[in-house]
Image 1: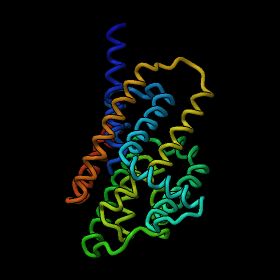
Image 2: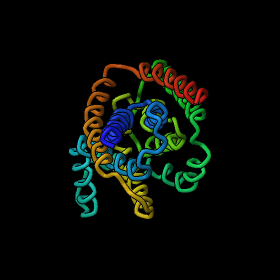
Image 3: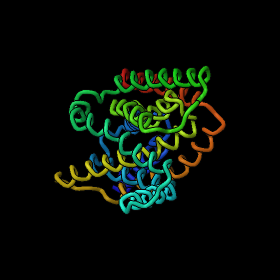
Image 4: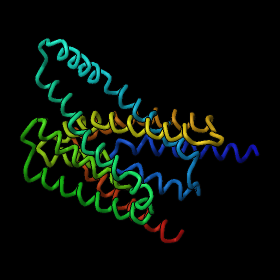
Length: 275
């Protein structure tokens, strides 16, 4: 009994770590969680409860990291409502986040159940991981031949929001899709990355809220100790990873993540074939 409890705690720590590391890197948290669950031989660890709390943990991490940006955007909104002067750049960012969120919300409302029921196989995740890596490769190639030439606009925000829809496919990294999309739209890597992280807040918060509402409709025993430990690990790890990635992307390309995604797609596919 004690051994089983310890192993469940280790599973929670490992899955929380995987979620924290991969949620905001362009390497697909879904692909890693599929691989981790195959390796741990855990199909659904605490199901909805675990997924819901992990999404809240990683959302809290990005909100804390970008707290100054969020505070400035809140002030911008309040000043705009009070008909006071605001910085045009801040207003563009605020509207851009709203506009960029809409496509994924609309498509998700109509297709989420279909995707969950029919597009969750490990082989499909492996295929999407590989295609995502090719997409990131194309974005890097375009970036090298056509250097960034513009700033964030409402049109670009909407276009990046369309790329975010791709993340509904299991195996497609949300951050990778929006960063690559931003690069294709003419933003620098760091500008695309910062917008990607801010754009993640409404989506990840919405997903966490929906999963929590689904959880409230469920019955059964929930292992809150394991879930809390997993969430704590995911939160701390996500904070570290966000800082690392923004520092890394200032001076480096997406190539390490491209090769990593190709290798991971092979591992996930091989794991599915021998299962």
